[in-house]
Length: 290
Image (cartoon, rainbow, N blue to C red; front, top):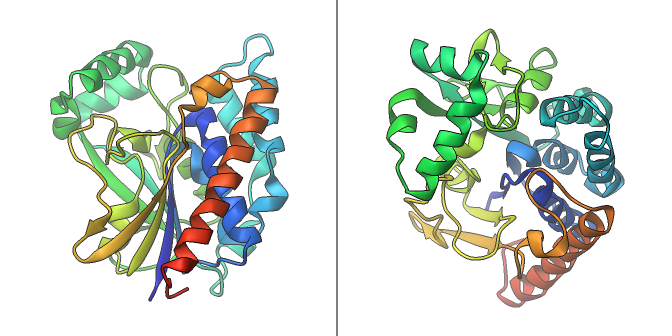
């Protein structure tokens, strides 16, 4: 049974998913596909090549340290992380490496392109946060479309290659309220995956995978996007989705979306490892096909 592991968005809270991926890798779990949204893009890429434990919590600590510098915002931190922590692309794109997916939000109207890539994206970003609290998805429905990129060349998904990986990694992570620098992939406008897809778990089933591990960076209900209108269920079209999530909000451990403490990042990363190990104990008991 083909297994896919899908990691959710969460900015600095993504240290939890990274910890889970490390636990799965350390236990010898090797998926047939890995899928990422937003901040999970770099750790999940390292998981796809079997090296996520080597990346470690230092990835998150470095980002947090960079954010403390003057005149450095989330766009610069994200771009710096992509530059210095990219996986070796020859390995990621190799035929023997598991398929790797990245979810993005494609901007499909000229008006939205001007709003998202123009001089004042934060105003729209803050407006969309308010809309998300109200579960009002109307702007997204009119202006965005979920798009998946894959390392496999086919007619269903846009292709990840050595020329556009950096663009994809930045675009999937760009929340409008805190990331000022525009995001383009192949000269087309994109923004953070979270507006259309918090975690590409259901999308992995649509891609043909027969069992999915979905990692959330938040406790409680696991939604398909930030507007909270549709759940990620534990079973979709007869396929099981095994959800791993933290016991408590990482914010209570010192890690929020765009700020964190070094101690908090280490605690959240370790909690992810513990929850991954806990999941594996129960999963083996349930006689998983892996």
